[in-house]
Image 1 (tube, rainbow, N blue to C red):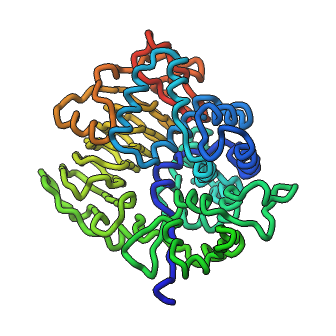
Image 2 (image 1 turned 90 degrees about the vertical axis):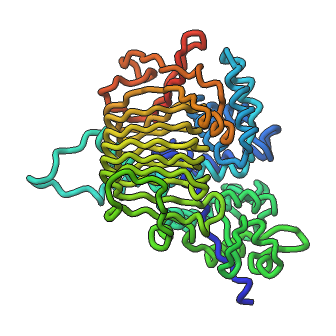
Image 3 (image 1 turned 45 degrees about the vertical axis):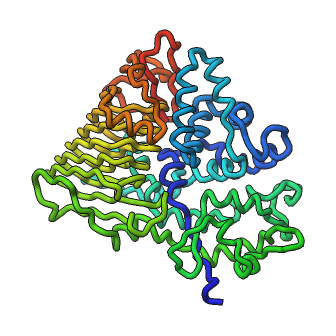
Length: 485
C-alpha cells in the first residue's frame, strides 16, 4: 500500500497570479459566498458556466461592487485559464474593435467561466485579508525612538508589502485552515441544513472534485509525475481512502476532508524549495560586476508547467542578460536588486519586482502579470497581460497591456509612459503569448484632474482605498485608464 500514499499540495499559480495583492472586498466573506453558491445553482444561466452578464448582476446587485471592480476579478480569473495564444489574440482583437460601451459590454458577455472554480477563486482572495487583531499585536509600543503614528497611506503601504502571493507556507496554511469552507462551496444546496451548514452525510460530486483541481495537485509516493487532484484520485486505492462510493459516484465529504488533511504538504516546487535546492542559472551575458552576493536559483529542471520559478535576489551593480528556454513560461521574482541592469528576454509566465531600487529591467512578453511592489526608481519595459504597482515611488514603466494597469495603495510618484515597442522579435513574442500586434493605438493616457477619486491621482499624491477609474469616451481616450485599488 506504500506506493499508493498520496501527497497533495496547493498549486502555485492561483495564489501567485489569481489573488490580487490587495485587501479583498468585505463581501467576499464566506457568509456572502455561501449565499452566492446557492443562488447560482438555482438560477438559469449561472451553472455550470457563469457568464459576465450574470456575474455583473450578482456582483453589482447583490454584493454591491462597482462594475469595473467586478470585471477586474472576472478578467483576472480568466488570465488563469489555459488558453492558447491564438485564443488570447482573437479575444484581444475582438475587444479592440469595440468603439462604444455597448459594443464592449456585448463582447464581454461572450466570456464565461466555470462557476465552481470561480467561487473558489473569490474565496481565495481572502489570502491577503487583513486581521485587525494581528495588526494590533504587531504594532510597536510607543516610545521616544518610535516613529510618529502612521498615516493611513503608510499603513496601507505596510499592509500591501506583506502580501502572501509568493509565500508557499502561507498557501498551505490557508488551505489547511479553510478547507472545510472551501469544500462547503462545492456542495449542492440540497445537502445543506436550513441554516446553511453542511450535513454530516453530505456528498461531493466528481464534478465538484474536478473544480477543486484549480487549487490542488499532487503525486503518488513522491513520484515525479504531478496530477490535478481529480486525476490523482482516479486510482482505486486512493478513491477508497478518499471516501468514494461506486454506487453514488461521489465522495463522502467528511471522509474526503480527512483524507486531504492527512495528504496535504508543502509545495515541493515552491519558492522555499527553490531557494534551498534549486539550480544556479548560467548567464549568457554578464557585462560587469560579480555574482558573489547574488542569489539566483531556478527549478525548471524538475518543476511541471505552472510551477517553474526563477528567484533572483540581491543582484547589485551588475548587468545581466538571458534569453534561454530555461526561462520560458517561468514565474520570476526579482528581490532586493539594486543599481542593476537585468534583461530577461524569453517569454515569461509572470514577473514580480520586490524591494528593488535604482535598476532597469527589460522583460520578454509576460503571459499573465507584472507586479511591482515596494520599489524605488526602477525602470521596467514589458508587454504583459496585466500590470500592477503598489507601494512604489519614482518608477518609470514602459508597458503594453490589454487590461487596465492596477494601482495599489502607497504609490508616491508614478510616471505613466505607455510606448509601442515595434521590433520584429517583439512582434513574434506578442503572437506567441496572444497579445495584439496593432500597437500604435496604445498612446499615453490623458492625465485628468486629481480633484475627484474617479480620475487618475496626481503624480505626487498617495492613493489608498478601492477606487475604480472611469474610462474616457473612445473618441477622446488616449489610452487605458488604470484601475486603483
